[in-house]
Length: 151
Image (cartoon, rainbow, N blue to C red; front, top):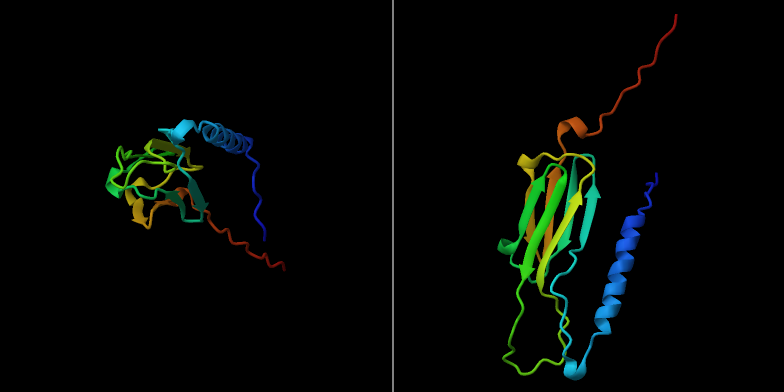
């Protein structure tokens, strides 16, 4: 059985905006490689739904898990953090700086409420994984069909 994927024009607009932002940032390279990366950046997420839970994965390489702030308010999940800028290099003068730094924040609305008492967060190899269990009231229920015997 195949899944139906709903078209989301807003996600397409955000992707286009991000591509345009990268294009303009790349054009800002000045004399002697003086380009500075943006001080705010977009956190990339994957969200998977099963019958029992939502699983959210966020790419946060190089960030100490203690520097992440995760909040859940109703159906809104927010992940915040910050990466510090290295102001000096012991190796010498920078010629290229592409690693992003600065604060980030990403909020998303979940389709249903979650059981906030049982939320679990783990961090491994630069990936934050959140397991957000659904409450029993919103889990799908199988309805059994009984055959009526006539006669």
